[in-house]
Length: 150
Image 1 (cartoon, rainbow, N blue to C red):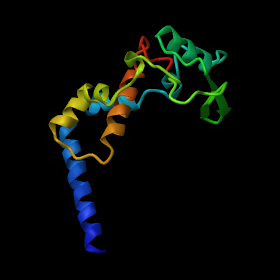
Image 2 (cartoon, one colour):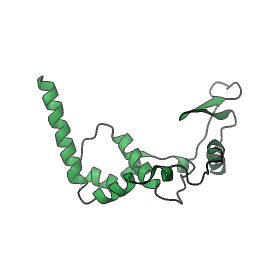
Image 3 (tube, helix red, strand yellow):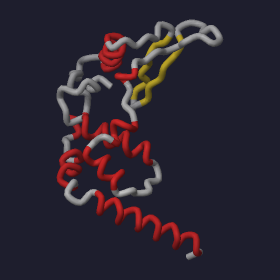
């Protein structure tokens, strides 16, 4: 194998070992998050016969979001989109979402597992994605989560 490939493997191995070490003692919590039955990972506040977009839109509006020129569309098969319902003037505000409705990288970093990863100084390939996923996986276990409609 070319020298570059060997370096990549050894760097990957070092990252994996550092992450494993950082996660020592956290494995049970991570396993519990990952073992959550798929059906329970869906929006618990939304029943099968409810319109998930309507629930999500109502949650946004009730939380102070504004997007009067937009509509959400569901194309099926996990494909969704946002469309303008009228012409949008240049330099106009199209959407306003309150900060408390956003799931941020910092929220993932603030989880128990996120703090362990940071403390271990692990070099992650996609840290923002990992910390966002960490928060989402943990928060999905909370039936009373503010973000349930999200």
